[in-house]
Image: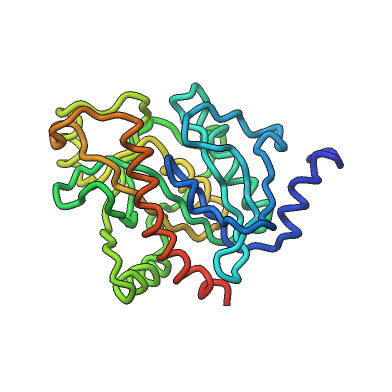
Length: 264
C-alpha cells in the first residue's frame, strides 16, 4: 500500500481516465503529445521505480492525447543492463495497470535481423523470444499462458490502418537480449536461425508483466540499424537515436489513426 502522499501521483493518473498507455523507446520521445496542457509526472514520484540512466530516455509519465483519446505516455524505460532486476524494470507497467490502463502499446529501437527490414522501417511484433535469462514473475508461481502475448485483435487493427494509410509496416519476431553490448555476427546468425526478425534489449519482460496483469498488448520496433554481420558499418547508440527520431513521424501517423478508434 502507498502512503497518502505517495498516492497523489497515481491518483492523478487514475483521474485522467486513460485506457491506453504508450511506452516510448530510444529516440522516440517526439511521439509525445506537444499540447500545452499535457501533464508530466516524473518516474521519481514513485519510490518503486528505479532511476533512468540511458541517453534518449526521459523518465516520466505524460498525460496527453492522441486526437481526442486520452493516453498515458511512458517516456523512457530502465533496462536489465543498468544493473536492475526484471521486477524493477517492469515497475512502470504495474503503475500503468494500477492507473487503469487496459491497452499497452510498447515501442522500442531494434536492430534488423531480416535483410528486407531496412533502417527507418517499423516492425509490428507478432511474437517474441525472451533471451534475457530472467522474468518479472520470478519468486511467484505465476504459470502464465504466453500464446497470445501480442493481441491478435490489435495486430489486425494496426495492419489494416497501415495498409489504408500506405504505411509500410512489417510483422515479425522480436528477440530480447540482456545487453548492453550489441550482438556479435555469430549471435546474429544464431538469432536468425531461431526465427527472430529484430533484436533489442527491452520490451519482452514488459510484455510478460503486462500479460500477467491482463493488459492487451501491441508492440512496435523501430528498425534503427542492421545487426552485426549484416550492417557494413559499426553500430552506435547515436545512430539508434537519430533513426528513431526520424522514423517517429510514421508511427505517430499510425497511432493517430488507430488510437481514437480504440477508445470509441
